[in-house]
Length: 286
Image 1 (cartoon, rainbow, N blue to C red):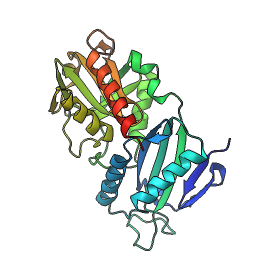
Image 2: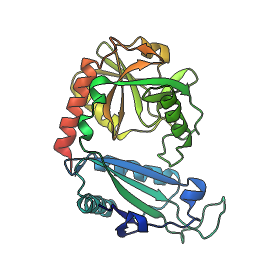
Image 3: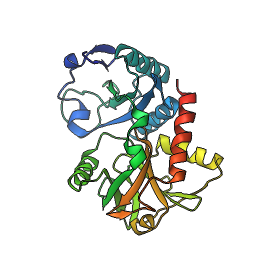
């Protein structure tokens, strides 16, 4: 079946979707994006993704392409048109096509480009990796300083993913000034005793939507949460480790730089957090 995508208000077959070579998303990576997971045909934490999208647009002085209600309607229509059960809806907004290449931003007469498409991943919440856990390596964090903005500037995270692949592991954690910032496309955590440790919100990390929900559920489950930097050495001495993201939800990390975490298997608190998150998110899905 041909996938139907969304481009600037029109639903059309993916092969027919065309964007100008002068679009600033293509020339300058001048764009932001969001990925919303879909379970059972329903959107997970859609309001959170809309709020973060609005923040990213404000930080880059970009114009919102349409109201949130229209975004919701478009997400639902794409789910319907593509018979999406489990998977993701990808959304991207760029500053648009000013008609030529220039480092300076175009004026308000240039309309933003809005693109959306679906990716089907049946059984997204039940992938085998959740039962075995991820292995990660550490790599230097040389990204730009505004990682809190969810931009399409993803070259170095892609390179880090390839470093992990070459090392025959699942992902990489970025390290800056001796401390972990985050994963290539996720937030990073360790657990010691009953305490979750994760880096505090700042310009250094993405303000994860899944992160916010998981920390809220952890507090409700009487777990302690400490927001501060931690080192790779501290992570290797932890009882458990995990990452969160919109598509991986809560994923155990069982090895860092060839050192097993705990007993080298997904820990009980991480496993419980994943169960709680999926249960609560399914209840609240729209």
